[in-house]
Image 1 (cartoon, rainbow, N blue to C red):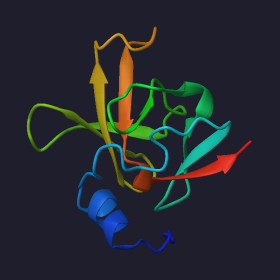
Image 2: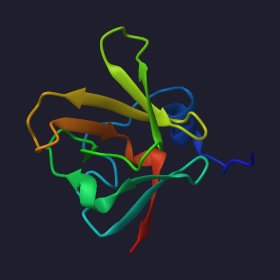
Image 3: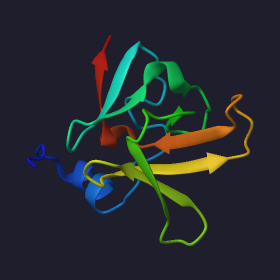
Image 4: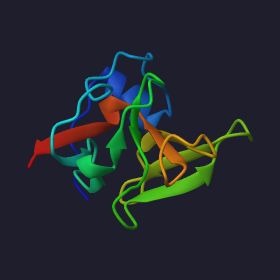
Length: 119
């Protein structure tokens, strides 16, 4: 599979499981209609209808496109990491029980892991 070329911060987050600074991501407070894709492999990951404002500092979604995101135990032994199911690129972490939405789940996603295509 051919992957997109990544800059240094994208490599750090997507390939080395880093995190962008809070409130720095272009999609943190972005609410246009469309689809969010993996920056590394272009797989569709999230629909804008599932994005919500959480004030956590990162883009937040309460659902993903079916089978697009894989959940794994994080290396810290506490959190659950989310990765692109197609290429394994690091997206962020998933949290449950915060009651932000009816689904009671928050995918906390680094904007540098995503590309957006307007509806």
